Length: 385
Image 1 (tube, rainbow, N blue to C red):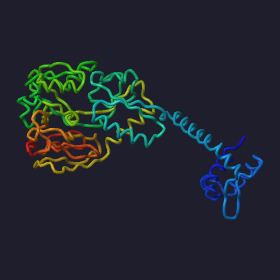
Image 2 (image 1 turned 45 degrees about the horizontal axis):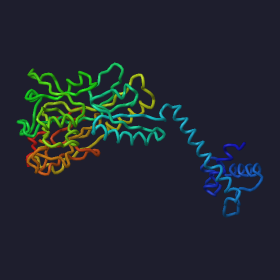
Image 3 (image 1 turned 120 degrees about the vertical axis):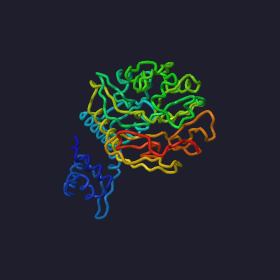
Image 4 (image 1 turned 90 degrees about the vertical axis):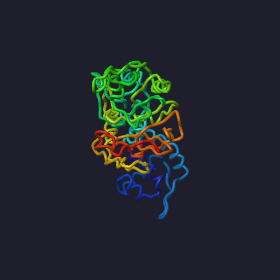
């Protein structure tokens, strides 16, 4: 049976072809390497290296032995490393889910950061749907979920907020609100507001589509939809209105839909959730990585908004990332489209909104205050060219 030092000395010397460098890599003396190689050659019964005063090279027998031993030894190394990671509870497979495009983009960044720290962990990605908001967690399909808050469930642990997105109102293009530069929560009483169908908590429904406005006016409930695309199709057909995040406005630009920013609505918050009974070292490590990523300082600069006073101010060392509409390619009223548009947020005539922050776009009609909230910036930002 070969000793570990004999195998390592042989493989490293075959790679370096230099006794001094081999000793450095193995953290032993040069004399120890020479002694170990001579012992190995006696065990084999023939020289494995040809040595001169100036060169070291493998003998034909040494080359054949290297070809046989090296692949197997590397497999053993990898197996031991995986077993050690499993013992620490971090290595292995981690299924992670997300709801919506903004959460998906953040998740990609988090997975890349996590992979650099824990390369032996395989992260599997799953998209979830509004109609089954928390089902993937409860069935074990995912162990961690990046989803829209609020989440208040006795069997689930709510982690940190990692993303905040300005809230907008999706309205039919021919609606009276479509001509407005902004809307308020009171405007929800002006039409039917769509609800989500499926397994969605009642408190979550009320958070996004309240039963009444802040002044107490009743909000009529419209039809239910199971997906965002279905909701927007009904908005475009003139069947009602729906509050959405600016990330939805950035991704979906169906014909007949206009997005108008709120002046008084809290931003949409995305955060991490996991099963309380399923919390493992692997889950904790991923949550810690995502939380650290969300809290990274990010400077924001507004470029070419064409709107006097529109601005994004400050960094976010203590809060979640703030994300805007990023409306590149989205149509805008007064910008060469008739049926699809986005109002507000400092859009120029080509319907381009926002400036990249950390790889994302931030609506210049909103100001970030240490990552804690988003409020309209001064200056009366308007989409009109």
